[in-house]
Length: 315
Image 1 (cartoon, helix red, strand yellow):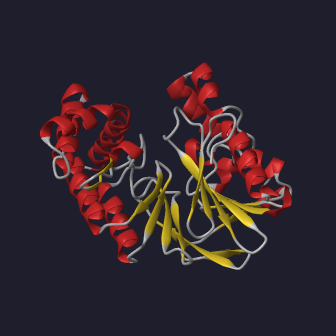
Image 2: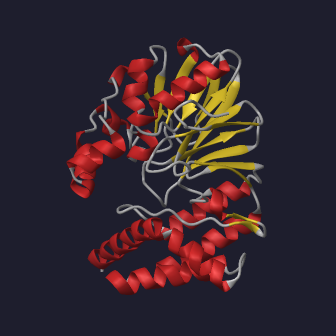
């Protein structure tokens, strides 16, 4: 289905709806509505610009506002949690469930906002994220590793996983044998779902990138033999163990690139991505697709450079 504003949502098997977040461009980021018996949860939030898409989806599905009980971002990066406080304001019965390391940043988002404004500038920040509304502390609950909650009798388990951010968990949905993986199983846009298999790119961040921990997290996700991975970037991915292998192979290469800088690092990342893509497509297509990923690779370069600085200070 799609709404009048052109923001799509897709009904998935098992009472899950994927909603486009309206972030940067269609198909870049999404969030999920998870239905239980008379209750729903939102996993990830998108940005404050995502609220109309959520409201339209609830209306399409005949779900009342007071049925939305939980707002659950996998971590507090603003494309995943930027609308958390706004959703609490809009949905009076909702509770925010968040990683213990992330709660304070959503209760008082000043540092998150200042950091993002420093990267994007005030005007671009507002265009991307809108107003970041603080979450009332009394409506915030943290989820420890292995802790679960129920949405209308449907159990979701939080598993803390490191490598992308220290405040990240993934949610295991036993009903569909699926992981809401946040950024821990990387990025796979629609154009990366290839005839020979889906290509998945690691997702690093400008801080807290840890390749060995990331690989361990990928193996943890794969270890449950999931049927589905519900990616934030982007959509439901039918799991294949080859995806985990390809992710880990790329992360091993990322570990070797810390001595490179600027253009040399950018070129090395493109070569790594092209090499991984060539397991699925020919050389020409690999070059083209790696070029399409230039913005994601620029972010990954920042994560690799941050990791190299951290290791240098420890020596």
